[in-house]
Length: 311
Image (cartoon, rainbow, N blue to C red; front, side, top):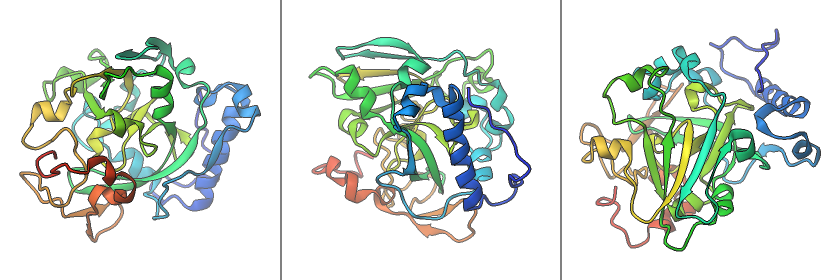
């Protein structure tokens, strides 16, 4: 397991993360992987130069959100409903051992230890915007790989039209799951073509470091053209289904949270507008872009759909 070691040259958490420190973190992650089992990849994978930490395709060149903000201002209701609760309660999430079950309408189902599930994988850095339904956004350098690599390996059947995801269920340790805030465990879903899109990734790290617990360790989804709650954290199950799977927020408040949840400034939340957003670390608000600015890549997925009805 990769362990972050604080060096005297590292900035204080309250400081904005400068680019040179960011680069050192990336170098540290690569070194950690090479020296041991960091990020669950075998030494042979590192030896054949399959790790690529240059910005991957689709990366934005916008200014990064400071590391401290990314890791202390979170929604992760399993660890508490306040924005600072996840970082404060992060040690309550047990990430070892960890297994991921792949099942449903596929030819190759199975339950995998995390190391086997992730191996072999080409990790890339994808700098993505993440837009939350509450009106705030971040720019985060994720480390991960395209979800379609897992889905193709599972060989979905012709009848599979959706992919469902499930978060870990551990009420003995996770305080949020002892309260009926949502129906637990947390579940999410995508249409199969959305899940297969190269923008959709499984993240195992951010800012060149192993994914912190409060950000969804050890494995989370990142779907950058949708609101943040679609990017389910701490995944333990991936299932192929023929019918649209239930999703936690849609099941809880269907008039507020649709299945698709594409970022759409023209569809207001019942309690606030979505036309503007505030980037964490900035004071001014900015105009919300359709599909969170990824319309050129994903708009074709929804041709012919009324996106105010299928919100």
